[in-house]
Length: 263
Image (tube, rainbow, N blue to C red):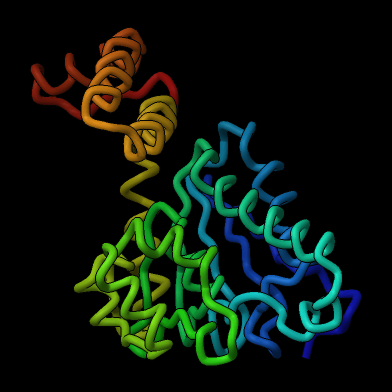
């Protein structure tokens, strides 16, 4: 069991990969105010470090994340200013993931419910163990999962999101995969290996190109068609000006591995 003075988030860095582990496993790692602020600080500290290529987000204990800390929320149920700050901070956290130059991979096990399901949906990639359960169960306790729906609906589509929101039922990992909430589902004993495979693939690419591509993707995905093509066309022009684009094309034409200048 974690003592109150233990860090909310454990950080480990190895070979260009930073692993952030939610460290309140005895309570299924709720997104309390302390946890949210710790994650925000962790992401902010990572953003400007070019040596960090990929971020892996995981949870300690029996599950990834069970959502907001309901005990904490109930203690402030009549304090609308406190609640507004909580949800604004959580939204800042979710958007910080998409704004981070480095790709973020969720390594999910056990459960990912409510804001924990939202957290999964907002990561760039997600790998789940085959025993994981996902849910937006707020309706069961009279608290509709409105903010978690933002990320989840952008992954799985309206009808499926509304099914989760209106019924509160759980879906299994294979359903989450079929619906598009996660990228891979593997046996629990293969979870680390599959995440490592993805991090190794990403690390083999140009840092500058990946960062530019991620930024452009999230810019265009919320736009109309004309705006999206305008933004991405400009991005492609800028991308062609990068030294790594020059190197990558030369390497392809010469049938040799690229030697990235920005890696």
